[in-house]
Length: 509
Image 1 (tube, rainbow, N blue to C red):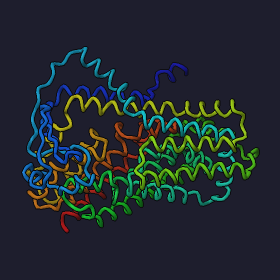
Image 2 (image 1 turned 45 degrees about the vertical axis):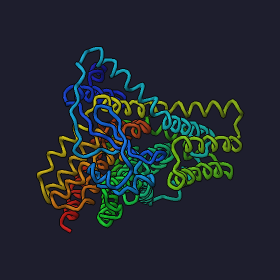
Image 3 (image 1 turned 135 degrees about the vertical axis):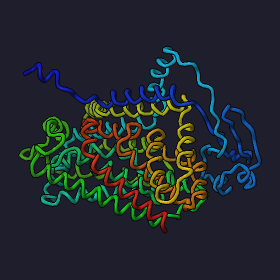
Image 4 (image 1 turned 45 degrees about the horizontal axis):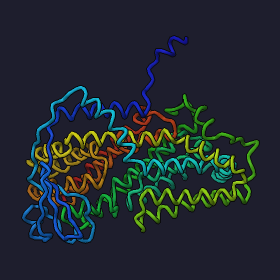
């Protein structure tokens, strides 16, 4: 019996999945030709455009609309001068294939080993954020505040637990569509997972409510400055163009996600053995419901209520800071570190206990932090191999002779592929829009269709791409990638059909 268990296939961990993808991408850098577009960057101090050629030569041109028109960058000058476009923009028609270094085993090995280390350096801001969140959760867990709060919430929601899925998905979806709520959602898992487990659901339901809400919101972004606004600006159109279709996509997409998640959640609640992660039921409950016993629940005192209220309000402040004050992860991490000091007053723990629980809580999320850094290494390998521009150049040639609904459909799949390689929404926008947007004019399609195809394609691949946030999110709840793929694949097919139909409507009208 033990021999059988040993021989049974076990899906690799998130770390191994990332390393495998890293190896595949490294292999592609030796197969796909290296190449780059010339890039244009606005220098506000000198009020000039700085242009870097594919070979690295730098020149300057006057920052005028005439310069942009001559270069074929169909964007209003004001979008550069007011800071709306702050990243280097690809210049159409300037792609140049570059010589590739002769591949050697030593070069490949050093690239593979250096990329994840550099990824950790480049991701230190979000890593620090995750560790501080883990520390706070560890302290609050020790006080019994979470256990008492979960029990109170479970009693109040008896028979209405499905509404929790609806509320969380919609709220996070609104955050995604308005200001790109994504990485910040990692902080929500330690709070939401125990609530769903106590309600009789499984951890996949918690991931679905949070992660699908975020993905669907960013996929159908309406006023998100990191995708809709910057993509529209770079495409030379107003960001309100195509807004009705994107609002429809947002509402319909969220409805499909909620229906799909609730249906699965109720099936699991009725029969726990139907859970895709049923084999982990005890392990997850022991981890997330540690100390949660309905017969011996800590009293929900005013002190515990106050701790949870302070913790909840910190997220409200974080959302405001990101949306209105343009906070980065440094400011967000500082906020939660400040909250940690406030909680120390109410925790009623000794100094040694407090520090010990904070460190233990941070240690629980160290694996998540490492995954974030490793995933960044994939992008570093691609940038070093200079294959992103080559892929974009090849795909733009493929779609240039298409028209109508076929064009919009193929563009959707083009952006799914580009979204896998370029996970940054703003990075993909400034790289691809100057190249792809003029194709819309050639085939007689409104440019806002290109912007929507970009959003829908990149948003859809974020449901599963290892270069995005999904592996870090799964690591938060100790669920393997294969289980998520099995859960989300039917939903991806449904959302894909919906996206293609919406894009087709955009072409017709």
